[in-house]
Image (cartoon, rainbow, N blue to C red; front, side, top):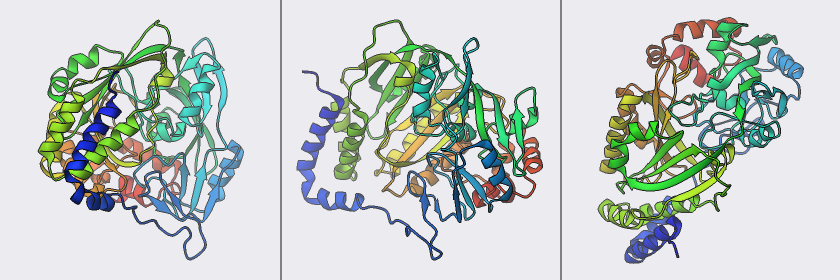
Length: 469
């Protein structure tokens, strides 16, 4: 009987736990305490909003969920500011919190039209990516690329530069051929390379600060079947072969596991092979097994490394074949906080080695893997991938752990290697830091001021990013 990754790690955790159970249980209790939660309502009776990980929150005076573009345009003119759009709340930064109006686009969802000849589809921006896959199947299309998690709204994913992986694949906004934008004056603009071209370039990755994108025309492709393979390799081997590995597959990424010397590589390639659906999710159980190893052996990183390496190094590959949209995204129910920077691709592996060194020298509490992906360049002015081949590096911290010390140690490494931060993930950069990273920064800021001269779409976080920081 093949020993699964989940079972293998579970056995190791059990053995390790038995060896140190006396002191480990008290430590585990402390690590598993729930973070404090803000009150459900404030002194004025306004109801709490929190993001997915729980670290960003506010008490909006108004909550609105318009079911038409006309209703949204009226709100943009008249509702209390700051007006902040919200999707699934999967951004870790404070893009959404507002004391003014929290604007849900859930009422604007689904397909608005499509063109079978060009494989284009017009989609309402409130549509969740997980719902869009099946909807596109009905018209014989699929998105070119998908992120690791598919819970986000389409508008939120585009507005923050959300991406998948693959040397030849742009982030999701790279597939946008046109969009409709509601301004702070309630005007509806049609934006494309031919109409309102500067708005199209500036607001495509716009963080909801230029206006509210209501509908998007996506360039898709015909349904594609892929073969997905997940296998474990020594991290140094994967890092040394990363350039060739990236070019040798349609899509590839890997997860580097601290305190193990190992990486899980995920490759997907197009195929005509018969469907072989992926089995039950093992990622969550595997992650929680790594957590238990951390809980019991955190103060003993050498032993933790030997046990993990012994159990993981020779595990068989996991393989599946199915429609692309079914295999590219995953369920990630374990909450976390995340920092991700996008580096010049030639700097990616050097940055990874430094980040791993930082973690393994001084952060024994880390058990989430580091995620490594590649993204093709595009021409959106505020895209982290503007004008350059990029490699992303994402560091995660369990939502019950204090992420601040870890991220404070990692961020200087990523900045030193020329990284641009993911707009929806944690970082400390302000306007003065961001402006030099984006060649069209001043142009984008001028477009924003023209569209929203009174700053009705700017909360405190966005003012630091674009004006005051």
